[in-house]
Image (tube, rainbow, N blue to C red; front, side):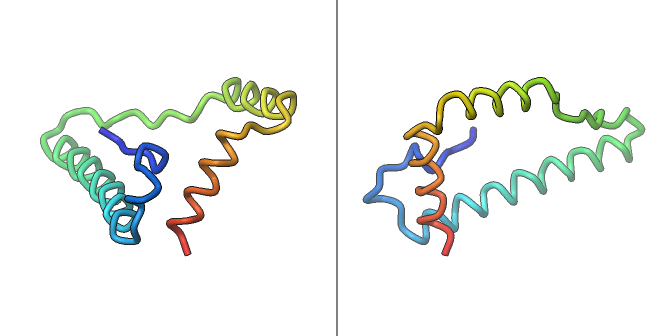
Length: 85
């Protein structure tokens, strides 16, 4: 389960909450890496390394150009900045 900063009410976005969310992301990544290592040591096939689809990225860029920027996107960027000094 992943939490987004926008899911947390403004009055609850303390530095501690931001720190804990960042820590959760780091620990989740570490667990994924450890699971991959265990699978490798057991001789199981490794997780395939897939590159992101370029068509999706191009579609997003086109939508952003035509929309002129959305309020929601700007709001999310501002929320992320409020937690990162």
